[in-house]
Image (cartoon, rainbow, N blue to C red; front, side):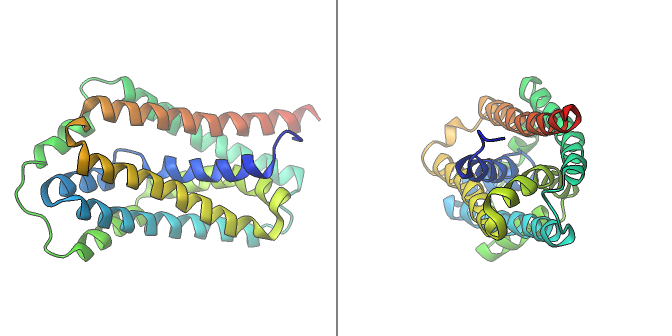
Length: 227
């Protein structure tokens, strides 16, 4: 794996965060709807809550794995973790690719029904708390972090050592914030662009990212079995 550098590892963590934030689920639906009704500050508040929940879950999985397994460079352990990543990420990647080509997009149709409501919470703190809870207690989000972290952590530990958890959290946070910054810009300046095509593009990119992580897991497994 000599072709893999610190930059590759940090970039992977960034895309882990971006892929975690992008799914068109309850949090993004809430962020879009309340932003269109009450203004971009509500989208920002939803983003803050979601990023907090995502970072908490990632840190839990990351630090748990870092201290639970004493030797993350052990080939057998890396094989097991890569297998877990492959099992988790392939179905998720296929799921989002299917939703990228499915017509009509149920997520968009469902969200659109609520966008004409005239009220949003009076306090932005309500958006922060609700999105943090929706994120932190979402079983799919928990499964996602187990899947991606299981194949990222051993490699990151090999290259970055004890700094891996800190750098991982920093880069994942950057990926998460990049998504919600994009969402804020769309809600504020280009609300007409938020339609079925946008949902389809997001799901397609997300599916490809997840399958890319799954492909890396497959490479790790093949490397271990061939040697």
